[in-house]
Image (cartoon, rainbow, N blue to C red; front, side, top):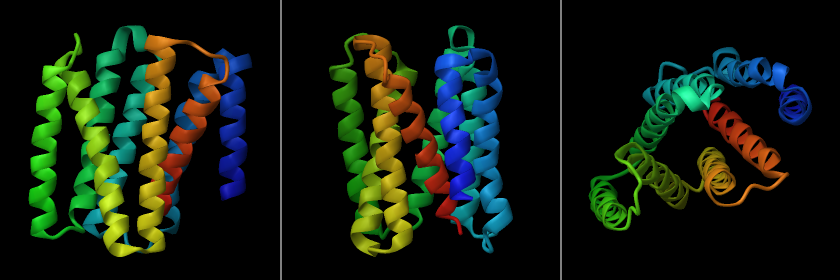
Amino acid sequence: MPLVFSFLLAITILSKYKFQRWYGYLKPFLMIFIIAQPLLYSDSLNELFNKLIMVALIFSLAGDLFLLNHEKYFKHGLISFLFAHVFYSVSFLLRMDNVSLMLILIYVGILFLMLIIFRDGLNLPVLSYLVVIILMGFLAGNTFFFERSSNSLLILAASLLFIVSDFTLAFNKFKNRFYMAEVIILSTYFIAQYLFAVSTY
């Protein structure tokens, strides 16, 4: 399946540059392909962790569909991905002890306060999204630090790739557009989602 995934990713990226008409079909199709992987190959979908990952993947698909018409549904897409990150983060919280959880809640409070103080015109959905995606990366790193397993490594890699994708998207959209941006955004995004799906096996 990694070869099929790689092929679908390559033609999705190509369509973004050369065949915009097909991009609207290929992007959600690739996400559906990723969602199908746990359904086909995971033997433990009844576990709460895996259920939360599946819900996050479905919210991500919804976000992709909304952002195909980003001028009209940008906020809807942002909120969909916000929920996706929340479900990813909650799935990581299941692996933590009470002390780690308390420290993380303090961290979130401080981060959110700093973002409000230095928000520079950002609205609440964007602020919330920034807090949650940074939290997701922090939780993934914490999970790997304590578990040191191949599964937790997949989670950490996926979270970091997701962050790279989002920050590249923001830089390209609001700061300085560059030609290779879509290659970085789409490849890191879909590889992250694929790794999250594989972590349920």
